[in-house]
Amino acid sequence: MISSGNYKPAPPPGGRPPGGLFIVDLDGTLLRSDRTFAGPDLKALKMLGDHNIVRAIATGRSLASFNTVIVADLPVDYLLFSTGAGVLQYPSGEIIRKIHLEPPEVSRACDVLNAFRLDFMVHRTIPDNHMFAYVRANDGNTDFERRIELYRQFAIPLGAAAGDFGPATQLLAVVPPGDAVPLIDKIRVAMTDFNVIQTTSPLDAKSTWIEIFPATVSKSKTATWLAKTLGIDSHSIVAVGNDYNDLDLLQWSANSYVVANAPADMKSRFACVASNNDGGVAEAANKWMEKQRIAHS
Image 1 (cartoon, helix red, strand yellow):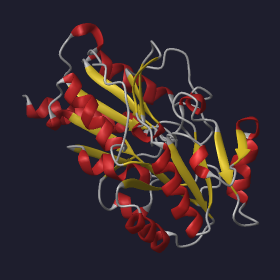
Image 2 (cartoon, helix red, strand yellow):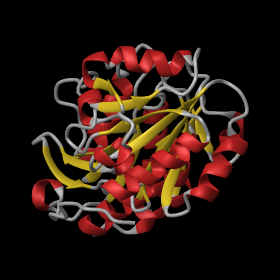
Image 3 (cartoon, one colour):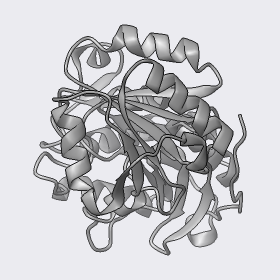
Image 4 (cartoon, one colour):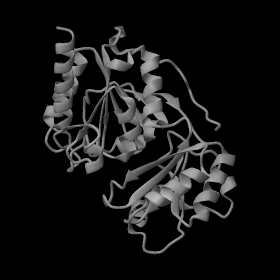
């Protein structure tokens, strides 16, 4: 897998050795259902910063999409956006890492998705990855059509020659509601040198999005890079999530929590806290800080 990136070291906030890394998903975890942030969650993130804990958001959103929900003085240090394809230092806004697929990889990925007759998008490279070209293979895929409409000014049909698209951050296929697991398994077999990620659509909460990234891109792999860059011990890492695209991050983290609105099978695997609407992130932060206090008492 070919990737490119700017691997500029990211200095710890304040120049002090960090005491840990707290990574939280955005949609459905830190962000409430009404697309606002809960006061207790923001207060907890500030508290973590006061204890010299590095705070990071790990989201599938592009930078442009993230900027539509940002609040003033958001108490975080890093943004891992586009599922880890990009890393931004906050609040300076400096992009310190970015990775993309090369044109031959884009062409091959398009061939696989076309072979399965899927509706999909191909996204430009960071920081322009809110822009995409799309392939409509079926009629009546309402979630796919809604996404195109939301980004109408940034969306164009993909021409016949996918190889002419150039490099891309990712491909995203939209599968209507139903059992998409067998299809995802087949795509993973056909694309073993890519990272194929399943997530529930944030638009209708029913359709499945299949996201195709370079093999070097995932929330956990980018979090590994960040922790190593900052010199943070793996035992001092916490992750909070709510959906299948957080699974690799939750499995990787030494301390993992899911909010109460997560799927039942995820709640059976990880410690569960309150929902995204009821301060689940604050509960996870407080539980972990208490755990740390007891361990060091």
